[in-house]
Length: 174
Image (cartoon, rainbow, N blue to C red; front, side):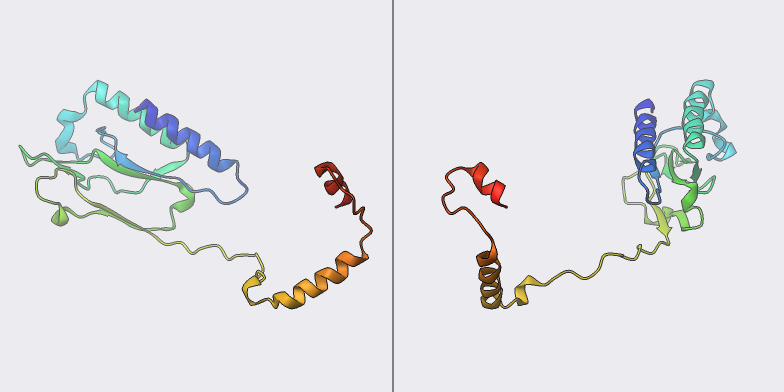
């Protein structure tokens, strides 16, 4: 878990150094249990050690201004032996994405056979930023014979030493 938190902090730091809008989405199987996301019937999982590990993640999400996108109590894992549903998987997003998350839900009915984790579907409504870059030249449609003729005229006007023997001399003429 400490490694995951370290990566989350580094990614947040790298993203915040850019001048563009920064969004962070962290999702995965943390294998942590806490009353903030697990249902109360799983209280047998809320042992001191488990809660301490979960609070480490909770403190980090607060530090990075991340919010839990997957609503509390939605199952993300079904224990095969007992059939008990839990939520060790989670989705955390930057607060800047709160309004963009239109749906974050589990789909237990689509759970593949012999798989204990349940599919999580997250829908984010975002539109790409409009490009401010102007159109580029299309060199494929150039009349290259005309370009060569024009280039010869420009090069003839340059005063260059015809007896260049070293690369340094060439670059000094540019």
